[in-house]
Image (cartoon, rainbow, N blue to C red; front, side, top):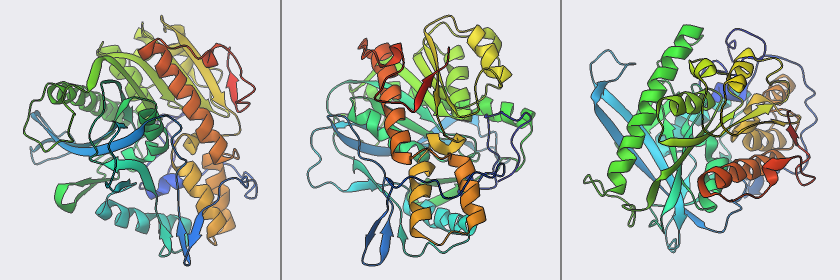
Length: 411
């Protein structure tokens, strides 16, 4: 993977040598033998089945993907003058999943390309590896009316990389909307198998990051507008039964990883429809660091990152006028907040990955057990949105909990 943006603790972007390269980091020499024993791939008939942790909420989860076209906006990454196109997924509670297939983690053409890239990055064949099947049922009917939470992935990353957190939130009674930022994301598959790959700079400057952030803000606000139309029953798409009327957009939140966390903060500053937000380990590149927010916002850091060494976080913190919290996930790397954490740990256990590559993976993910990392993140992300979108206080955010020793409260 290429260099980060300036500054040793900058978390706006892990530079983009391809989505598969997000498995790798270039700094540090953490020991390669400290992966915990609790994360194990399944092996069946000589094949390796990668898995994601089961959701913890009380609802079955449905999911559907939508192709959106913003005809009011020329795609900023394209020179053809074409309108901006996006792919999003909705993850939501359902009661009627019988007979429906579970959704794959990645769509077929995207998965084929991702497999090739990851094989090159890990320097080992992945021919016998089956990537995850999610716990969500494809195009199942919507059930009830629920708060809405948007998710934006890191710079260059695909929306699928937040699946472990996203489907858990849906199982707790939220409609979660994940966004692929086309041509910045390394791989986006559109209907019919059309693939669009990244056109962003391989080694982005601060100016490039700010430009990408503006595009993401426009993408997010367009998605919010489209969600309002869908909830009102507008459009002629073939949608899962029960979608109109199921989106309680009066209770909308947003979270994201890395540049996606920055996107959540910046979009909140522009759009009062977003009532609460979380930044998962992303530095702040835009104006919100000085304009601040008057609504609840939470920062969640990886080990070695925080207000003490990231000036953008300190600036933002000092301008947060609503409820605020900073948490740290001990022994974690930047990518511990993505699906790469459990998937990489399983691959390392199952395949002959070269030691130098394992060391880079360890630096990227950290030495925390992936199962514990996901469990802790799910608990605190869920508690935050329950508190600020539903008024349900589980008291988990009041102070350290012996149930989650991995989480440190930063004063």
